[in-house]
Amino acid sequence: MYIVMGRMLRGRTIVDAGQLRALVYAAAEPEDGLEHVYAETDLEGAGTVLFLCAASAERAEATAVRIVDRLLAQDELLGWEWEGRRGEV
Image (cartoon, rainbow, N blue to C red; front, side, top):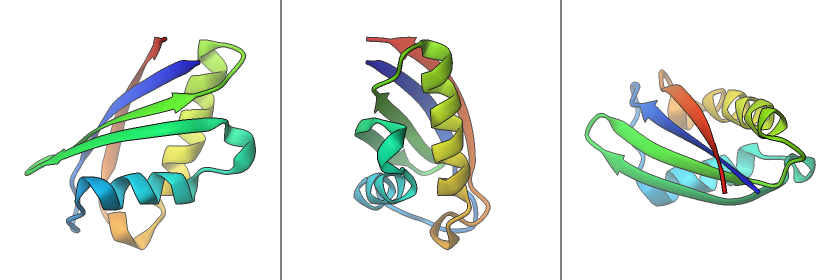
């Protein structure tokens, strides 16, 4: 299992941590291997952690990028941006 951590910078909309987690789960597809999402919001955005089942760190990161691309396309996150980094569990 791998984790991909990132910082989401708030755009024009405001969501709480529970809403953000739900949006991440909605953006993920079954084949993405998303096991769990952690999110903590603040005034500037949110810290996020995606727990992914993947064959390698590179695949986990590529999958996280795809999930985040779909996530940021949702109207609820208009103008939001994501900066990510990865780690191994």
